[in-house]
Each structure stands twice: as C-alpha cells, then as structure tokens.
Amino acid sequence: MTVHAFDARSPHPVQVLLNRLDPLARFEHVALIDSTNTELMRRARGGDTATCLLWADQQTAGRGRMGRQWQGQTGDALTFSLGTVLAPLDWSGLSLAIGCCLANSLDPAHSLGIGLKWPNDLVLGTGAQMRKLGGILIETAVRNEHSPSLRFAVMGIGLNLSPPPAADYRSQPAGLRELLGQALQPQELLHTVLPELVNGLQRFEREGFAAFQTAFMRRDALAGQALTLSNGKQGTGAGVDSHGVLQMDTSHGRLMVNSDEVSVTANAS
Image 1 (cartoon, rainbow, N blue to C red):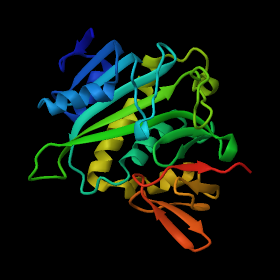
Image 2 (cartoon, rainbow, N blue to C red):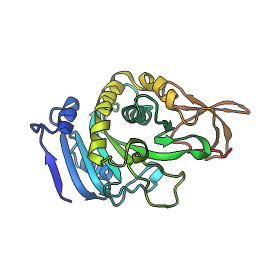
Image 3 (tube, one colour):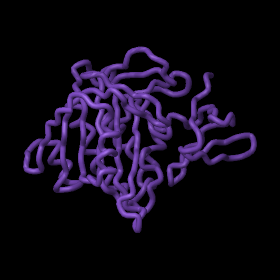
Image 4 (cartoon, helix red, strand yellow):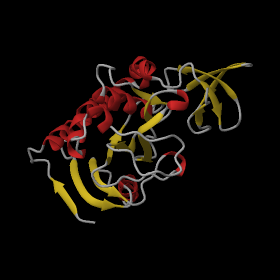
C-alpha cells in the first residue's frame, strides 16, 4: 500500500478542513486498499487514534452494514474513512447525522431528490423505485475505559459516481453523475462533502442527533412507506425520534426500531 500523505502544514484544502477537527490531523490517499475502515480500525487496535482521513481510489474488500460487501472502482466511486476521537453526550443517530451532512452538501436546495434511507443510505426515489447512491459505516473503539463516551470513531463513506456493475444488490444502485454531470470526479466530490461533514461532526458532538432530526425528516425516504422488518413485522414508516430511532406504525401500535435489531426494505406497491 503506497500512501501519499499530506502533513498539517500543507495548504491542501482537505488538510485545512481537517485541521478544524484536530490541528494534528492527517490526510492520506492510496490507490488500492482492502478497506479504509479496516485499516483505520487496525491502527486504532495498535494504539494509533490520531485523526486521519484515508481516501482510496479502489477497495478490494470494502464493507457495508451487517458485513455486506461494498466495492468502489477507480474513478467511479468516492471511498474514504474519517477516524477521529469524539465525545458526544449520546452516540445515537450518528449515521443519520452524517447522512444529513452528505445530502445537504450534494443537494442543498432539495431539487435533486436525494433522500436518506434509515439507518445509513443515501438514495434516489422511494418505495420500490428506491436506488442507492451511497452508504455510511461507523465503527468505534473505546479510547478510555473509564470514559466510555470518549471513543475513536471511524466513519466510512462510499458514494457512487457511476452505478457499479450489476450484482446481487438489495436495491438498484444509482450514480451522482446522473445528477451532477458526467465530468464529476472523486476529488471534486470529496471537496464538496467534506466542509459540511466537518461542521456536522462538531455540531453532533455538541448537540447530538436532535439538532439534525428536522433535516433528516425532510429527506426521509421511508416516511409513509409500507415497510417490512427482517423479523417479518410490517407497518408504515413514521419518521425517527430525537435519538434517531425508526418509528413504524403497525396494527398493534407504534413500534420503535433500533438499527442493530433489524433491516428495513420498502414493499413494492
């Protein structure tokens, strides 16, 4: 793995933004890696919890939620992980907050139809027509066992510029070039999403998911949709609460759904 590193004294725009999170932050770019999340978690287990943004042109073993494979081909996807120490009062809803940051940076006027599918996807469309633009994978390591709220968080982000080759996807993929032009390049996309992401992480640490709840509800691709949970329960999406917990109205009343318990798919109409 050949790493192109940029030190904190560099005027590189990505480095300047990272320095707002941590003056000693690192920015690294690699052509090929197994997984940016896996690499930063490896480092954390070895004691390296320095703030780092690791961007890869291609991943050979990229991972999504629940162990699903996620591949990013050179030039057709933006794949990076940002690892940093955070200490929010409540960790609930971090993936939703990051989703809001990404969607707001890509579609600030809500004119492109970019939505958010709980708990960690950016999508186009709703229901059976929903197509996945990207996803978020968050992993954490406790920094100090006496302060469990203080953790090293690795936030992996994958965004399709062009739809990946046909495969056994849970939902059909989409690409941002459909919306933002065929000339869109990964580096340009990184520069687009990073300012909002840095600001959002700082806000999440201060205020938690409640500060993002309204923004999420405006892009909620599951609201009002017929849903089926992985345990077979069915109902209608009814938004999320102030902690980012999915709410679903069923024949037996409102059900609260946590991300580590179920997966959700929109029923075909």
